[in-house]
Amino acid sequence: MLNENQKLKFKGLKNFSAEKLFFIFSFSLFTLHFSSCTQFWFGGIQDQADELVIQFYSHDKNKPDPVQIDITDKTTIDNISSYIEKAEPKKKDCGYDGVLKYKSKGKDLLDVEFAIVDTCNYVAFVLNSNVNYRKLSIEGVKYLKELNQ
Image (cartoon, helix red, strand yellow):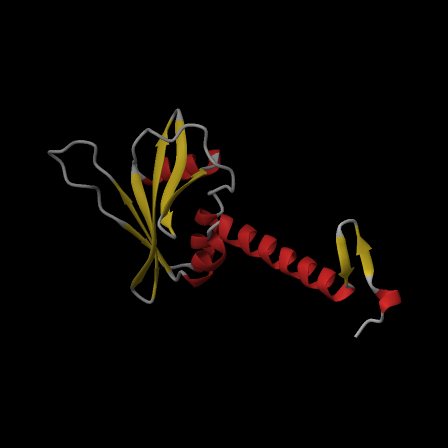
């Protein structure tokens, strides 16, 4: 335990010990780290995913959705996932052109809908009861458009 000479004095606070300061600093660091990890969702989902199903939507109600594309190669899953940026898009009201379904051992982990029209390039997903939006890179838009041809 610290003696009286080792106690830090802050204006308006008596006996603010180094231990209390260390605790507050540690807690703040943990909170900052935790919030930054959960702010961008890929940390756990991408690592767990062993399958990615890409499904494009048909915008014609009289036609069924195109055939889905199943990807099980981890490197390809990681490459596709890298097209999703941390930044939020400015425009997010264009509807969706398809969905990326992340799976692990046959179980759904997360569905990420995407828009790849000229003016809207983003993804949307629900995590912790919140809808989250992220930008889709130019390379990602190009890749998905090529898959859909």
